[in-house]
Image (cartoon, rainbow, N blue to C red; front, side, top):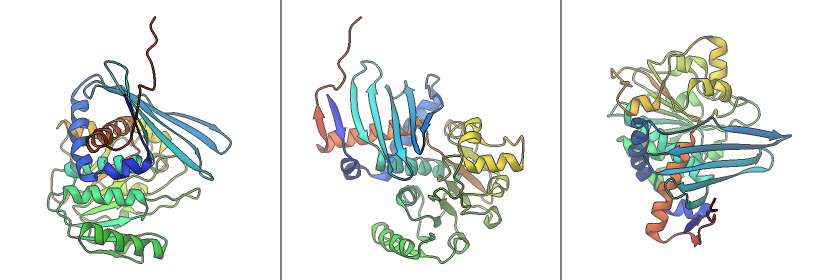
Length: 329
């Protein structure tokens, strides 16, 4: 049977904290194994319309599948994840991945934050007020004893609304700041989750870094988008990526700018090496750490697997006969 999940279904069953726990274990298992296959994403374009395809084969999870999303910045984008059983080929689920993408992004940041931030991190500064700012904040709060949050976005109304909504939801003080530096001053963890649109804007500067801070940056996922400046990465003791630097150097405006300023730089390490214990991400309390994420098909597939499990447990979604019948040769 194949389970179909609408965006509303995903939102109904998805708990970010639980997804962090699920992804932490699943990503570590895949990292410790040797058979995961994650080819670089395929990007096609026709005028303003683009198509991105992200396949993955995950032996430890017993899954294979892909995410594809398409559309334009003008008319919007549609996301779909197809999850299949590795052993039988059964299509386990087709998932609207609009909210799922934001959820798995936040959950992966939560996983990284467990390994990179100080365990006593209590203050969070957020730059951004959209859905991914929310999911990243929820994930961070699920892994650290956060007692205070400050948020900045360019829209006064949006940042005030975000502060009020998240304060009520998280049960801790969340206040709006009038400028980005004020939002991150004194923070133990900084979440930069922006949507800068067609005109790239650097939302966070390395000059604002303070000893011991952990910075999460998830908004620069194409060459045209910027979010943090090169100094943010250059001044950090540890920089962790969720995809190879070779891929980031083509797909993230932040890394393109960094390598233009510092040709040959390659000090970053992969999240996989941190999760397996090969690399110690934080050596001293005063170290500055940065997690730079653009997302992977493994995160999509495992995130979709989590929501499919929860949907079946809660009786959510639409079940149909296997949507793809096997053809015998």
